[in-house]
Structure formats: C-alpha cells, structure tokens
Image 1: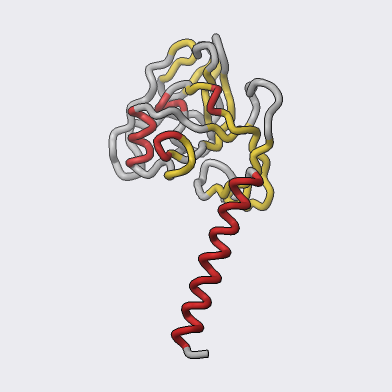
Image 2: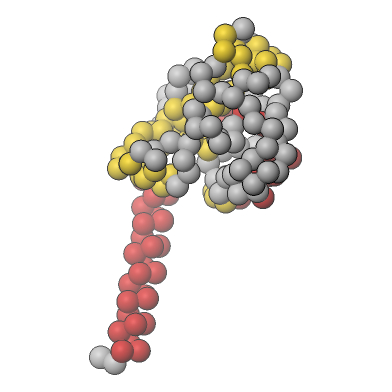
Length: 177
C-alpha cells in the first residue's frame, strides 16, 4: 500500500469512527461536555419521568432569545442539536415556578443568597455582560445555575422554559476541570 493510500485509509477510518460516535451519542443519549461549568467528559442524558425540580442537574435545550443567541455568538455556548443550532445546556436547577429572584452583586432566591453566584459585569475578554433584571420565575420555567464563576446561566439570560428539558445529567466518564 502506498503512503497516499495509507493516509486515505486512516482518514476514512477516522471519519467513520467519528460518525459512529456521533450516531451512538444521539441514539444513546450521550453528550460530551467540553465546558468548565461541570466535569469534562462523557455524560448521559437520563429520561426524566417527572417535572425537573430544584436540585436536579439537567440537560436542557435553551430557547432562541437575544441573550442566548448572543451567548452562542460570543462562544459561551457551542452549536448543537437544539433550536437555533444551540447546544444543550448542562446546568443545575436552583429555582422554579413562583420563586423570587433578585440579581445584585450575587443572586438571591426568596431572600436567600445563592452560593457561588457572583454576577460579573464583563466576560473574560472585557465585553459587557448584562444581568437578568430579576423577578418571579414564571410557570413552566426554570432558573439555572453553575457554580463555575464564568458560567453563562440564568444570572444573565433569566429563567427558561422547562419544556426544553432533555433529561437528568449523569456523568459516565469525566474528569474535574
């Protein structure tokens, strides 16, 4: 086999393996997390038989809103399978319907400060970040959070519809960032 054919064979094998992993991930509910919000690596989406609740770690498709499109354009979120070609978010549910959210230097939920929820006015590249104005979480919506200081979460885009929940997030093969 010539070196040109060998290189082509390796390229084709790599492409076939990549396509196989993508198909397996889509059909098996597997996702790769490459963001620092949670452990890096392979995660599984576990179907949820109830409404998502405070304390759940979930995968959720974000709605196509100005703040979330901006997050994708700035690289806070990746492109993916959700509407608007956004990637599912991996976040913790910290508040649900009827809870009062106040945004100041940090987030408070029903008057209680949320740990590790400092609100930044600029991203790592110095671009302005506008926090959500705060208010009551509407029916059918979830307020999401990650303890990672640079996380782009509901602090900045507000509560999002719960009907985008894909399932609970469970680590399969991960490493802490």
